[in-house]
Length: 176
Image (cartoon, rainbow, N blue to C red; front, side, top):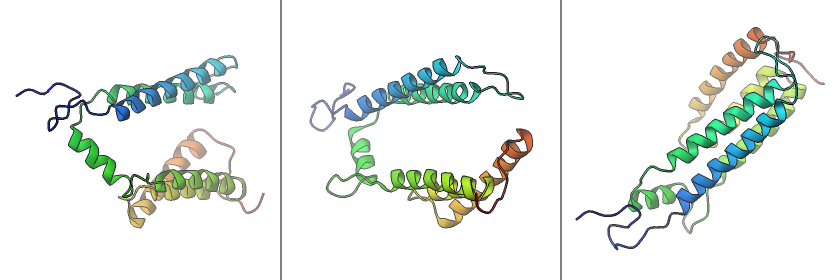
């Protein structure tokens, strides 16, 4: 027997669409914020990659944010079975419905460490700190994987920001 989209095959009752609504609303919010950043950024001189103006960074990040929001909203259209959705929810939370806050806390701590080390330590310690701490937010990552990812991102940061773009942040510095 064919089941209609949105029905739980076991009970023939419509399954909750809250996850799909959250994805749509979250994606739409990212699109709106990204387009607002692009709109605000084009008011300044944007420039080009070799000679960036003050509007380049907000325009580039706004466009990437809007694109990410679009991808999230489009991916919400994928059909998951009710069993798969409940198993996924159970694996990403604690018993009793409490959400797993580890990822969010690690990302916030990584950003704070980046700010601290960027000011007092330089580009490499700041890059290492944000990637390493944020990578620990994923329970599937081991310390070795987080370390290797952090070292790879430090190499990329040196090549892109320090060497290619000539960013005025020193690689290492001690104190302010």
